[in-house]
Length: 414
Image 1 (cartoon, one colour):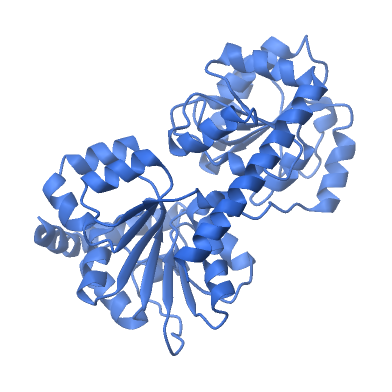
Image 2 (image 1 turned 90 degrees about the vertical axis):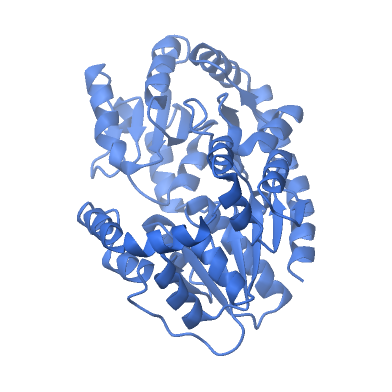
């Protein structure tokens, strides 16, 4: 099965290339990402040992940066190759202007992977969270390069899919040298799939730096939003904007000047979101508009990148996208450092243990239905004492977990 996968990946090279050319036409890739993913473009390799860290998208890339910084802290002379897969995460890492070599991750096509590893010759490799690529793992093993999975997790659906190919899975997963998992469910699953050396650790996302924001933009929007009760839904998915619209209809008579900021996870959904607003005849503003008239509206739809911290700073309450529809939820820790209380839906599978810790410490609330969300929003927005205590509890939780994570990460990367 492993040999078949290797051969098949090479045979499918042309169809995969055509697929990526279509993505290029749709602006989901650019010339640089295509060239680097197919290893048609090479950045200079520095002399000496090189540690390769791979974080596929924004969340994993942020964790990859934390790992890279800890490696640099332990050994300032370390040379780091940092790879990612999306244009957004590539920009995020590049904008930090760190002393890393930043590239797009190679596609898991056998002959591309061989060329990639032969060129970069990493001394060790760290994959963040849930990236399992058989050809990469096989070629790393062939070259006796240590492979670590850090802050690893495996979702319900991924586990089911791998179990359908259990023999193949065991041949792939036992190529992992060490696996440091972020939750007990993942520990059990990686063990079943064939990983031999597994350790449960604290979630490294607690080490994330506080999000920055543009102070000039903040002062401008704060003035426009004066008197409004601001709630932000971040990283929203299909179906969640409808829930927010229902909440607005339910609460608008009870809470005056209620204002929602909606930040979609994927900007290609912008048209479908605005269509829903137009269908329901509810007015809104688009963030990129040159003349924002949010004083006269109750909704702002964000179509810009890198402003999450700004909107958390403006908000009294933050709602976790991907948790009200069944998408597994997104990272609630990103709200840390801002004075906004946290509410998430019932679909937080991707952050199960973090969710449980938040509930246990009364650092946020779960709303299992649209009605419950309306009730919880009303409760927080009419009880300042509860609202303040909630985000203070969350801040304390993050401080405690961050100290644990920092100590663990330092020990792992010695």
